[in-house]
Image 1 (cartoon, rainbow, N blue to C red):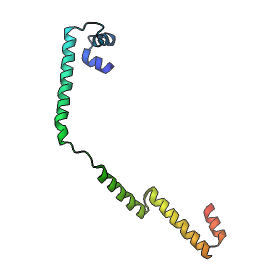
Image 2 (image 1 turned 180 degrees about the horizontal axis):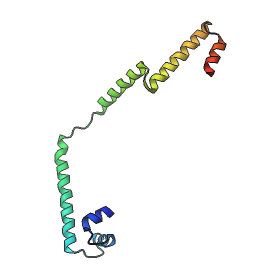
Image 3 (image 1 turned 45 degrees about the vertical axis):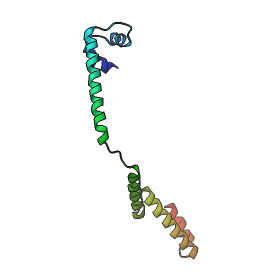
Image 4 (image 1 turned 90 degrees about the vertical axis):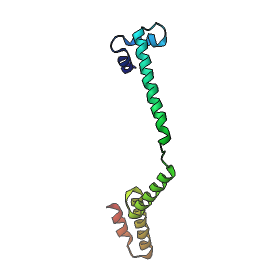
Length: 117
């Protein structure tokens, strides 16, 4: 509220005095009423401008955004980029090692040494 008091009172009144005027516990001077009226008129004008611009506003299509993100994630996964792609590569490598071990192509000791490096 301090910034508002400085802007509205312009250094002519303390924050406590302005609070009394705004709450109605003390009568406000005519200059303060004129300042508050001008501030309210500015706010009303700004809101009317915003209301006039709202019909031209086009909200974002969330479905389109979701589809684009899904396509990007799939491309990254297939290319091995990003967290999903890296996990996919690791799973494929582990599967290939397991299949090779099952066929007896890689000795068990070599697999154990690779895992500890």
